[in-house]
Length: 276
Image 1: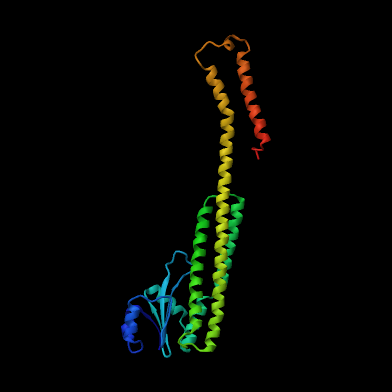
Image 2: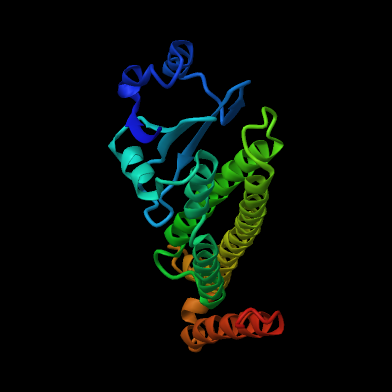
């Protein structure tokens, strides 16, 4: 029998699945792939890569020489299993076609992510516009999601190709080798994108640091100019009788001194190339 069912429907199929196996599955202790003498249990999380906020759909596949069941925990995983489920073929081919369709469009999706990262890289080079940080974080999360998904399938196909209980024929194992290699490439591409987006994020942080340094440079120049002027104002604002108060050119002297301070600092800043 070949069928997509819900987890709570398992007892209804005790004719095809041994009761001990049903109890074992119900315990929820199954790992990604478990091979037994007469059957295999394949558990994985399906990710809707086109919808980053969608939770993963957990699917369990029971396959033996006569039967294959796609066991789903909720409506989401059931809909996914039904979408990729193909009947009227052998059990092993049914499993192969299911996983083959899961990988369909993977290269195109990775290319779209790569283009997004490249655009973010260009945006960082142009400046730190509003919302850029959020876009980088969102893209990074999508890349991590894709990497986790394809790495999971890579491990899964590797275990299937081991074929410890000889449940799959040599012919179908060749096809599984093909999609295994495809999952390896997709996982590798996603890993490379993760490093790329990490570099973009570091570039963004560096750009922020440069802009902050430039801002501090402006504050430093303003402070350097006005601090001596403030000292001059404070000095001549004291309630004391100074010689300059009776000097006819005292006011002009103070004004000229203030201008001279500004000119000196301007020349120093220009020599240090702080205006660039």
